[in-house]
Amino acid sequence: MSETPTMEKHSFQTEVKQLLHLMVHSLYSNKEIFLRELISNAADAVDKLRFQSLDNSELIAEDPDFKIRITTDEQAGTLTISDNGIGMSKDELIANLGTIAKSGTADFLSKLSGDQKKDANLIGQFGVGFYSGFIVADKMTVVSKAAGSNESFSWSSQGEGEFEIEPSDKAGRGTDIILHLKDSEKEFLNDWRLRSIIGKYSDHISVPVQMLKPAEPAAEGEDPKPSTEFEAVNKATALWTRSKSDISEDEYKEFYKHISHDFTEPMSWAHNKVEGTQEYTSLLYIPKNAPFDLWNRERSRGVKLYVQRVFIMDDAEQFLPVYLRFVRGVLDSNDLPLNVSREILQDSSVTQSLKNACVKRILSLLEKTAKKDPEAYQHFWEQFGNVLKEGLGEDFSNQQTLAGLMRFSSTHTDSAKQDVSLDDYVSRMNDGQDKIYYITADSFETAKNSPHLEVFRKKGIEVLLLADRIDEWAISHLSDYQEKKLVSVTQGDLDLGELENQEEKEQREQLEKDSASLIERFKAVLGDKVKDVKVTHRLTDSPACVVSSEGEMSAQMARLMAAAGQSAPEIKPVFELNPEHQLVQHAAEQSDAVFEDWAMFLFEQALLAESGSLNDPGTFTKRLNKLLLAK
Ligand SMILES: Nc1ncnc2c1ncn2[C@@H]1O[C@H](COP(=O)(O)OP(=O)(O)OP(=O)(O)O)[C@@H](O)[C@H]1O
Image (cartoon, rainbow, N blue to C red; front, side):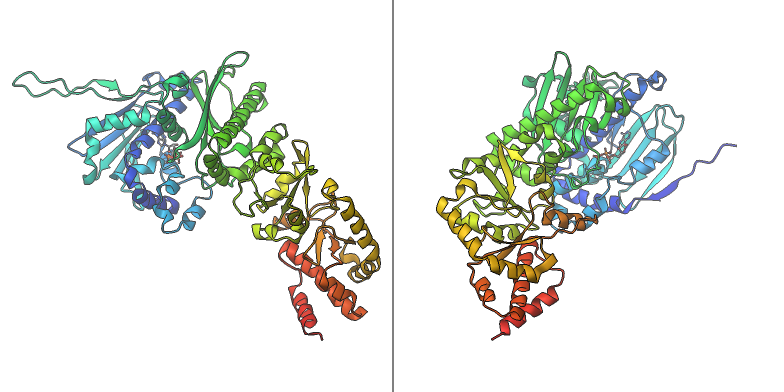
């Protein structure tokens, strides 16, 4: 007995519902992009089947010519995008067209403010994809038959809460996307309008996109006969295979949108054909804006891999390091086998040398942009700088190039904007200065106002102000730049070398001698709370500060580890005292009992300035009040 065909109703995942709603409203002014997205999906489906058919030619035996067809039905008010690609099973229809797999989506959507919800660029970050059909359609039907299967299914929805799925009787493999156009969107039935959109968005797709030939002009007294023959309306050559000089900027931009599903234009790209011992073509793009899930080091990344023009896989991450996870592009190799798998890629020496080449191209593209268009580079830095910083610790062979691409805040402007390069810094170094000084802190304000900077400010020595979470880790991997050591101003003994003159050195030594007994008094009170107590050379206006010892983990790093739930070693600071400061002199005049309060107070105050918090703020406040009231 044959089973009765049954219709099932399913609900969209909550995120899909939210996204659908936002998309229809925010992208309305760019509504024609739905066609680009659906043709793009159709081309991907063809690419996937072409790849599978390398192993199993049976899959395409009955219909070997890949194509995408766009047809309209004026009376029904429908526009259909058909492909003879890989198709979808019932389960795939439910999973692919009912959920969004990207992690972090719900979180991202819930954080959007009212204005952001209307921002096409933000919504566009998602890769608008299939759901964009609902911008112009009040109902979508998807009829699909997976390659190699006898069953086909029809999925349909009005783009609200639910979709329906039922068996269907589609003849050949592949997918038909049928858009039931809204009354206001009937312009998309117009042959000329469709051809112009396809020309604009889909020329570079290697699969032919076909439409019916225009009707033959009728002989006198007869009705024009509608054509039944199809013709390709796009160029149908893969963009990267064409020569650079034949490709317009707009074509490059459109191709980026096709491969990235990004709604905005790329910042820049590098297209290279390489012949010789290795033969490959790479077309790599740097996006303009960061996707919402850039922070996620596990997000899908990498390039689209082709071997001899045949699509092999999406997101081939072997060709780009994690710190370049924002790069999109295509790599077409002549040296890899067609049956290459992710496992083979992992161990292949071809992969390694292609990866090195891709990294070099991206870094030199960034260098070029930084030089030629500092404003664009600044925007890039604000979007991707923190990801690029990961490279300092992960890619030692390109570390110096990466360091040159970094941008920092510094005491030169005291602005939170990160626009100082190490080259800028080096070019401004004082006579006799042989080190690059930096400070790391939890926030820009803490860094900027840190007492550790006093002597540097007094002497006009620039210090880089580092306050991003990753900075401490990243900078700890960079020991020097252009043979200049990078030195933290909160770590180790401060040695200003030639920046200090003979007279200053002598004064300092004298002060150290004169303060020996005071230092001992402080040591007696602070005991094992500190590693040591010393006379400072860093401070001019503050009474005291804490520093960490050279070679030891910095306090900032220990805090980051603790915040990340890791066990960090207990770090005892070195307490540095400014004996010339009035408060320290006042403390020195007190009896031992009162001096104890002063010593503790000065110590805790220094901790506070350095870290922004104290373990026991209550006792600190009580002590402070007591000292304020003391006669
Ligand atoms: N014509 C088609 N043939 C086969 N599968 C398709 C087709 N259109 C869509 N799909 C499947 O549905 C999935 C979801 O499509 P959708 O356009 O929403 O997102 P996407 O293409 O994966 O990525 P993005 O969100 O970046 O656009 C695709 O990944 C694909 O598996």
